[in-house]
Structures are given as structure tokens and as C-alpha cells.
Length: 289
Length: 76
Image (cartoon, rainbow over all chains, first blue to last red; front, side, top):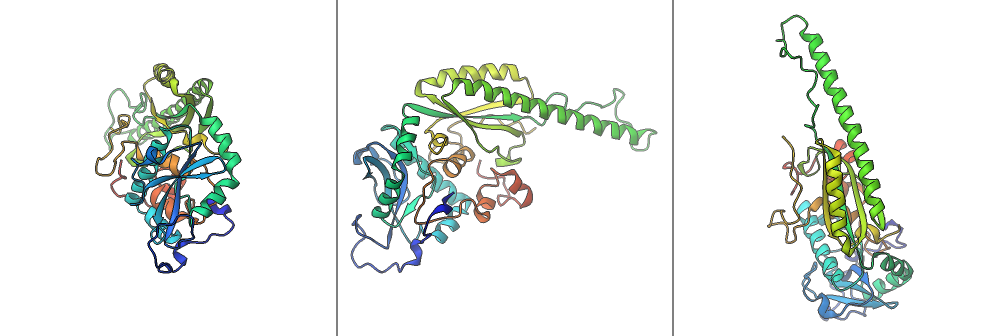
């Protein structure tokens, strides 16, 4: 991910008190302020971004580079150095706060025109460093802006339910024999085998449904991408996630995807849940296709 | 039993969620997607300490190996 950086300099390695004046000049190297980059677009006005709070008390502002505009904010270098930031993002509450603040700015920017979100925690030691790095990738940003312009992302997840129909087969009609009854051990084994078989059948049928859903929605979408499925137990989740995907659609495509998902739900049957989220700023289609 | 309703867009804990976007989906996106370019402050988003603490919700291989840091199952 970010380990391709040539020089992993960290803001907090520098003496924080190296500067006497207030930390306001953006184009002068300033050891106390780092530049957080939220997103890149073609053009934003300062007033477009004024409503977003971001991560610090400083205003969220546009930063021009190579004919494009980044959405940035000054953040205190001491709080956003490598160790300090890694520590903070390791705290679930702080991570959530940062993720939501980042997302709020990205969403506000996207309301003003095509916007390519940056990964969380894209940070530079000042505007000049940010401008240089962004300019080096200006071609990628232009390509990505072409791709996402006028389009939004929809998230679709498919789950297999643990209590799906047929998950409790093999219980003999006459009830379960008591532990001391003759044949109890064999009945138990048969029962366990039945449960196992049903579980496997449920799983493979859910996986088939996932493939069908993905094929059907990919056909509707400009682009599709499968994200890593969430593990068992995610957020207290007890269902098995079998598909975690994102689809890029025109802004007008909400009805189409809703109708398609409704139809897929009808076809999928009882043991499978299909959930959608969105519209998202096209995070999943901002990077390399 | 564990049949959760779909997470509505605006149902997260208001104390933690100024915007009602499901956290797990948001983390999927802000951490794993978006444009990645080289930064001055390189944080180890893919390395173990952060993965363990924040992404156990996302990575099954990790969550099986290490204990969940959220005893209450996380903020959602």
C-alpha cells in the first residue's frame, strides 16, 4: 500500500518547536503542520468545502496542482506523525472518528463534481510536498476522474444464514433417544452427519447465489469489483458473508440496481440475504481498475 | 437467532456516528480502496497491529488467529 514511499520521513521526528511564528503559511516548510489529503477533483472553491469539519480545527481547503484540485487540511504534525497516527488508528473509536471525518469531507467534495477519494491517512509534510506527490500522479487522477464522473458506487453483500431451511435435518421423527437408550450414539452420529451435510449444501448454494448476483449486477454496471468478504463474527455478524462487491453505476442507476436486487432476492430463496448500501462516492473505482 | 436486519443507512450509534454509514462498509472503502500514492507520513495500515485492532471485522484469517479486541463485538 503506502510502503512504496521513497523516504518514510515522519513528522514527529522533527522538533515540534522549530518554528517561532504561528503555523499559518502553507507554502513554507512548517514542521508543526502536516497536510492531509482527502480527495482530488477538477475544481473546488473554498466555499464548497467550508461546511466540512475534517480532522482538525483548520479549514478544509482546495490545493491546486497540475490543473486539478486536491481537498486538503492542515493537521498538527505532532498528532499525525507515523507513530502517533498508527497508535490512534489502532483504537477502534479513533479509527471510526477519523474514517467518518475523512468520509464526510470526501462526500462534501463529491457533491461539487467528480471526485476521487484518497485512502485514509494520505499525509504530507506541507503543501509543497503534497503538490509534488500529487503532480507526479496527475495522469492517474485524470483517468480516474474520467471513470467516476457522473457515476456512483453501490455496495452489495450476500450472506448465507446459519438457520437456513434444512439446517436441522436428520432428527428422527420419533424424537431424539435419551443418552442411555440403545442406538443413541448412532443416532447422534447420524444427526451430526445430517447437520454437516445440510451446512455444506447451504454453503454451496449460497456461493452459487453469490456468483449469480455478481454476474447479474456486473451486467448492469459500468464496472464491478469484489472486495474482501468480511470474516465470521464481523460486527457481531452471525451469517456467513459470501459476496462483498461494489458496482459502479450512472447516478441515475439507483432504480435499476434496486429492481435487480429485488428480483435476485426473489430467486435466491430463504437461506440467503442480499443487502445493498449506497450510493457511495466511487471509492472502489478510484484506484487502478 | 442471529438474523440481523439489513443495516439501515442511518442506524448507527448516534454518539459514534455523525453520518449513518455502516462502519464496516466505510472501513472497507477508506482503508482498502481509494487512490494510494506515496505519502510523507507512512503508516502501516496493512501491518499487524492495526489490522488486529481495527480490521478483525474485515479479515477472517486474522480474526481466527488473534482474539477480538472488542469484547462487545464492535461498534455496530
